[in-house]
Length: 36
Image (tube, rainbow, N blue to C red; front, side, top):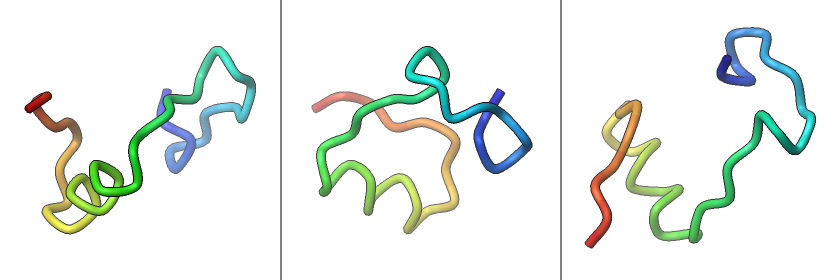
């Protein structure tokens, strides 16, 4: 479950993103991004 919907902050529930991918994800209000 996503953290912003009440999910935990345990490592099993988190994903690492490159800073540029993080910006891309949030700039479009997307729920996922495609690898390039």
